[in-house]
Image (cartoon, rainbow, N blue to C red; front, side, top):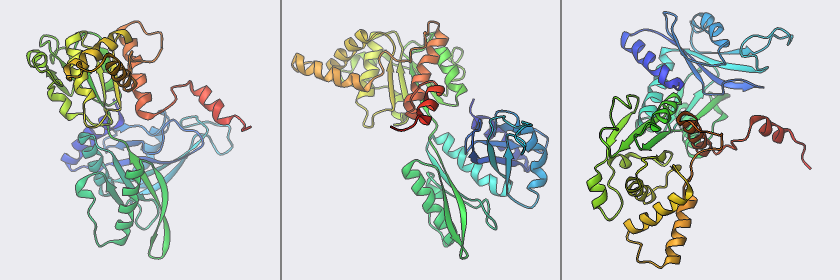
Length: 386
């Protein structure tokens, strides 16, 4: 479960009760730290907390001081992961320095409201925040329609421009803006859209895939033509559950009319694991003819079967009249868009380890990371240039 899945329910409860709260947000890290800028923790007056800003060691320390530190308004607090003499470790033990923005309901409320909307809509969000007095905690947002309007406050307009630039470039940056003739530091935080996973197939092997993806905080849909498998009893955690109309699927000579596909977004992933050749072919035909390509399409099983599926897709799309060489070329082109067979080589054998293998490849694809062991990545980073 992602931080926001824990933070937002507690925040909504406190808002409904009219209670105050403290939001702690990592805004800068020097050296090494378990959490990166953007990580949040929400503190309730009764001692409850949701989210983390470290590996689990800074949280209690932050909670004990956050209320009196924010008595007069938002503040930035420095937390070192080692004592100043470098010998007595505390905090996350990573040997770095973490800077937290601590704030209460007046400034934290609009931020959490924007985060909730972006989370529910699965849209990216950029947040520009002033980090220096006298307007520390003042913000502008980009990515939500009603937050993007211009106003008569030049400071807010400058923040709005920074947020829009961050949204366009998909990067987080630290900037400076002018306030009453003086330069003030502003942090612009880009938050990517909440990932979505479309699982086509409701067999037993889909259950651990659902569970693990929900632990990551993803939006997950499960679809299958077998109504006795695609049930809430078997998939209680699914955000959406669809029973595919097989008769309609098999009767249509073009792309499969799968209702849930209409809600797919470019940053989503789809996996085919129905273990049904007909279903996989129909769904694959729909996915390959979307107006905007998906970030990830995976097919379970050997590549030989996937090639046979793609030949069937060509037939469904009325391409079978083409020459054999033309069909072969189309199949090879489609294969470049697919992860088939899907997953990373982890020696997976059980449904659970296979699910981990699949999710690891999806995560790597969505983040464009290397999927190398971190010790190799660090060694490459530190290697001297020739």
